Image 1: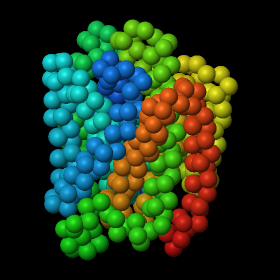
Image 2 (image 1 turned 45 degrees about the vertical axis):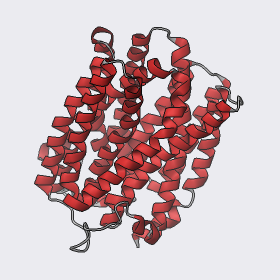
Image 3 (image 1 turned 135 degrees about the horizontal axis):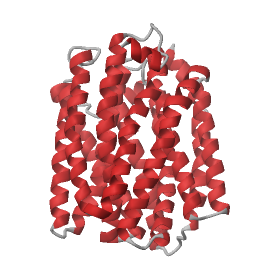
Image 4 (image 1 turned 30 degrees about the vertical axis):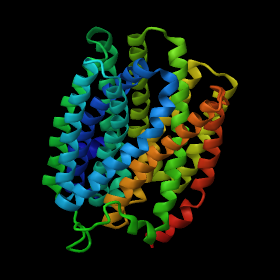
Length: 417
């Protein structure tokens, strides 16, 4: 334990319980994100083969519906059995669905590729947000400022290895076979997260009957905390930017590389590089920023970076600049943005941390993507869409992001009183 204190410069104010919680969740995230990085590029390729890259906006527009159903199922499970067993159930159900899609795609089912894509968008964020709900209920703010960067960084190590695994094996074993790696990576992730609960305890609501509620989505928490509504809006705007940058990347990837498995290999290598950059930010940039800079200032600075990247993509469109813009977005999102945003939840209630947070950071993420996708599909149907609009929407979304972040300082100070 003292060895970890020295490595991460934690100090004696970070308790043994804090370090245990961080270590267990980091290990769970290592396996979960390793499997997800294998799945992400593989499912993109399988969907692209089945329906074509031009249909990515259409399937992404459906994602919020699937996400809301899964989110409601999680909320119901949380009400029935509590956070620990709800997390176990989410993990095991995900593994079963991946095996089902593997078999169905092998039998030639095109809809199975769409189901896999939609479920991929939901499962990863539902599980990850449960990890953060536990951490936000266990760590103090002073500990979170020191540990959040390392937690995201250790989880990203798994993602890097998953991307490299995909890069090395997808052309040898085939893209569909990579789904098996994701299915079986769920098991160690479930064991590690359960270890976190067994070691540190299961967070409980403020009242004895707090779990037995029909408010599975935590709507009452939104009414009592304006900060939650603002975070929901902020997350939606960020995901508009994320969506159009991803679509732009996929479009350039399809036009720039003709061979399917080579597209998967490029994508796997790209995400491995992306996560390596994230790792540097998580272990170095994030801890320094969280200790030295107010989290509100951090949230204001991030969209300015993306405005610059979108501008470069507009004036010099290519696979290289599309990759750069997406790399900047994802690496900052996985490190600085995530670690800073989580601190806003720490002083809030159980329902805010375990229910409203899931709505914000699961449904809000996917609804933002779905809304952007639905808008693009409408333009495509009206024959008014051109690929250049992806870049223009990215710039406009980054400007809207900055505007949405401006009230954060006032509301966060009001909440912390």
